[in-house]
Amino acid sequence: MSTLRMTSDLRRQLILSAAKRCFARNGFAGTTTKSVAAAAAISEGLLFKHFPSKAALYAEILAEECEADPDLAHLLGQEPSTATLVELIEGMVGHFMQLRSAPDQEETQRMRLMVTSHLDDGEFARLLYDKVGKLIGPTFAASIERAIAAGEATRVGDDPLNLFWFAHHAVLMAALTQLPVTPCLAYGDAVAAERQLCQFILRGIGLTEAAIATHLGRQPSPTEGPSVTAEST
Image (cartoon, rainbow, N blue to C red):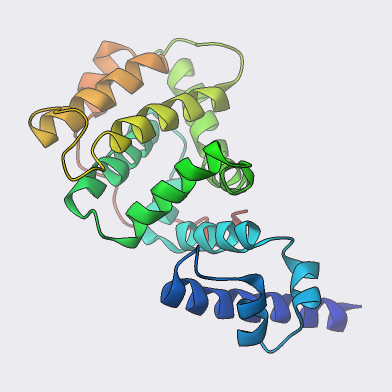
């Protein structure tokens, strides 16, 4: 049984490796499950036993890249706290809002794909939301609870994970306005706009003004600490 499992896991990784090469060479639109199967030297039917669609393949690759990000892995390995919560929001805002300075990079195309998915069948967006929620959601929710217990936040609603998604949606929409060569909106100074967006989100998820003033913009947590990479997803 374990031998079969190891074989299955190995085949899954081989498929993902082949898919990465295909997506890197041809992009999402130009890659087919047939071409990935050929690159992995397996049948398309066998590929579908591991991944039901091209969107599922791509979402899995993006999730693996998130898990491998050393900054995110370190942050998610920190003790849940108000400081960790603020770092998560700052990191999310910085990641999306700084895409405007590199409009031709692969990450920008991924954002466009995410938006297109919402307007299409939603499969890719659903898969990615599920993976991101499992990766970041527990640390976010635990940090919200710690902030409330410390008197640095008030409870907003019954589901902390909703607050994460509301924050994500606000950042995603703000970033989308900056994607065109001529931005749809002019937010002014980029650094000031990012800080203002962080403040807006932190207030919305319940942090007190004192907590925001204390933690926003402070030095990131030390690099020492456990990694959650192996425990993710």
